[in-house]
Image (cartoon, rainbow, N blue to C red; front, side):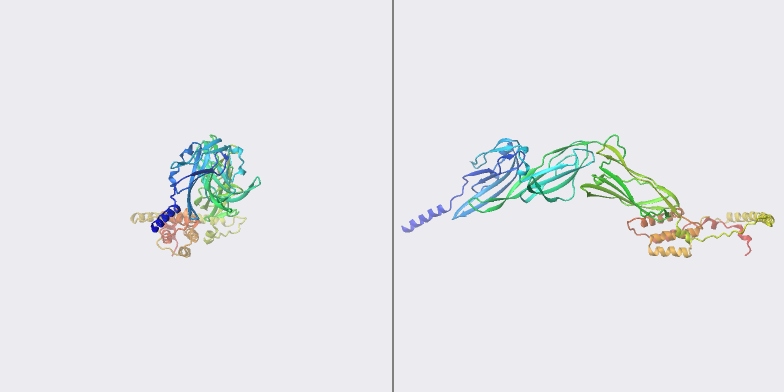
Length: 548
């Protein structure tokens, strides 16, 4: 009997010690009241049981609020064998209008919280410095043209510690959006209160005229706030979700003016200049001249800069490189730069003028077309001195003049008689040569099958060194020696198709930054197969008159 009573007592004690968990109450609260229209506040809903997160229905809030991110946490406490569980929802809501707005009761499994009457004020009546987190934006212009760069600057002000967060880009249609540089993290004092400020800058370029609407950038994240635990005497840092959004902005985009002529470029300022290798007044034939032209534009994207139209006389060959584009920040302004480098190779001596380069652009401040120009440049090209020094010189000695005729009339008569005799003999010899020509046909343009001499050896040595500059110089010396006159590379290239091809490849290799492999055996082969001078083809009949 005693054992039975002890068993019943133990069963009763177990029943009392382990109560059955059931939802009995729901509490709802907000982190601020009054609230500001359009700004987020936190609605906290607490249930005294472990409840499924999907049981809380927030659709009733959509009538008067914008519902943002929702976070859920669970907590279990055991004090003196007394266990309690709690489920907490934190919901970001933003009032849609000012006035007295009611937050409806939150219901879970038939248990409801008490409704909350929220006082909502307009943004103008609530100073920003009273807030712990807000966003300010600024736009460089209120009116712009198609293709004009618009600067959109965003500042996120924080008076609390940021745990994590995302600052999203503004939303817009009909324009290109790009972030400029990295975020700037700094501090500012606003009305005596210190804020941590995260600054970000975007560039906006509209593609079409009309009104451009910019939906303000937004922030979503968690901050750390100090709060005391219920029933405790110590303060703890708790994570609190927060959101903020900037106001919309509208910009009027104007079309391209009808009076504008040329490729469209809109900028605050456009400048063009050049880097010339030296201030030499004379340049040699075949020697490359490196010319670098820079086009700079303020508050313009580098992709908007037009290609430069560079014209040169026909006697100058150009080897342009690919244009380089970049953008950089200077004195709080975006500057875009296009750099065009080219090698200019004179092929003929003389005085030549490089034409003026003009770039039209539109000034949005004065609302008129302007022109950035690079003035014309005149250069003087002389024959290559290294080629002339290798050529044989002809020294003509003049005899002293006489004031009297003396023997000269008699010598003139003698030479005239000899010339008549020579003419008769030449006519007879020419008839024999023509007959031989008809019987044995031959070409008047023979090829040089065997080449020798110091000039050709220098050409071979330059080819072995694979030095394109030396090869071109040695080629000029050899051809000038062979043909008995000073020859430019352009004249040598006109002798035959193989020579034209190898000279073009040598010039591209010499004056371009791109390294390319050349077959120097083809250079020697083209030289060996070039046509000889025409003077060597025609055998002079006067040679037979000279005794051997």
